[in-house]
Length: 357
Length: 96
Image (cartoon, rainbow over all chains, first blue to last red; front, side, top):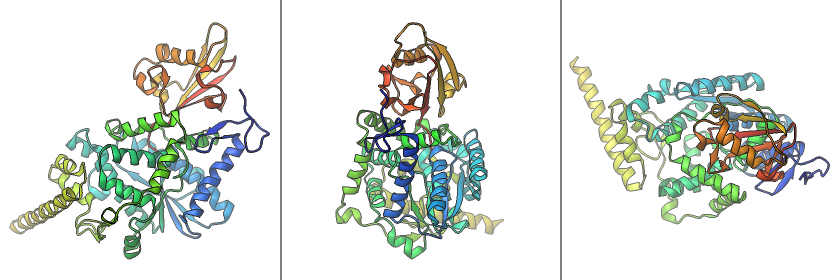
């Protein structure tokens, strides 16, 4: 049942690209994949020539392919990007320590500088310690918040202009489904605004916050895997040991089933996302401010990472996550003011303790 | 009696006792890929079958290549295996 490549019509096709029903041979597939990423960067103005670009690197297939392709495009089009690998060590024994070795391999293979930032250095908590306190539920809730800030901090440290992450079309579609399935209205609205480019634009310019972009957002996970496979790129391929308990797994399974029945499903979900317009009430972003504890940009007085850290320090991590589950704005406001009170009390207690010793 | 090579990667090798490559001789003529998958499910994988199959089908999210060609182009489970074929199973279900 051999098919000819629909592009060159000379070689036999190796891959069916589901989002556009193309049958491509290896060479045409490389060109198609790299062109898609390049088009995404150019059309959405994701990266500017001469910028220092931090690449969020986990050692996994997405970030490995991202680093590889950005390097190729940089050389091909003379963009003069100063590319850096930026890695986060969450302190997950048996997972992250192994994958960091892969990032170090990427550093050597692609000859890119590497900067590693760790949870223990930023928060005095490793994920292993967090899980010991809160158990196996909601681990990703903590980790996601901590990682987001850790990447920002790392990017600031290396004075990057922009941070790229390896999120692909499947990831974005999965997040949409996840938020819909959990009735998480606030996160759903934010993801719409983020993907449609309107979220935090004002904040970024006011606070000089590092931009975050996703050059792989249009390519399917299958394409990334095939690209890495054919190009023999080395990546770390094990699931985070805490991930099997994450609710996201259900959204992922569902998306994969949809893709199998109808490969267009993933890009159609993204198209639907781009067509959503929120009403005035939903699109009002909360005013950006700086967290009074750590200075990070947040929509609250105390950022989520600090709220979580404070809860963990007080042995109350489980409580923090219960509140964090469905972030209706009322709950968030309530949580925020209660957290602010707890922090003030914590600081008052500390001051009392210090002054009495 | 086609002899084929099965390759497991993307984390799937943990289901085959760490073996990334398994060589098998299948008896009979006109052996379809469906039979190969059944053999993997019943005879090769001893536990955590749900990471490889969903019922009788390869779990969604696992890519299958036949001699480095996407199985979507080769008829998927109805592909008739040939002597010396290399069938690769790659899981996508992990962090990137």
